[in-house]
Image 1 (cartoon, rainbow, N blue to C red):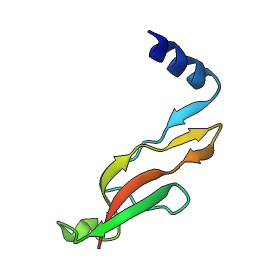
Image 2: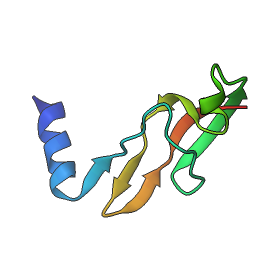
Image 3: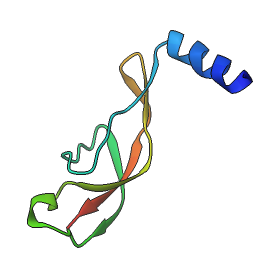
Image 4: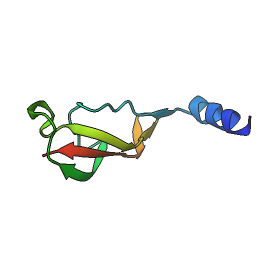
Length: 72
């Protein structure tokens, strides 16, 4: 109950979770690359392979970068 109220209050103030999916383009302004792995398919080369930690924005300003794994 306390968690939901806290989460709702932050959302009212403008906090949003970033929508990051595997296959999205890697953007240095929004993502932090933790590691690179050989890409499982040629389409994922230079793109996001896995999302480790969700990023957040507050009123369209990044307060925590999304931590991702990229394909090499």
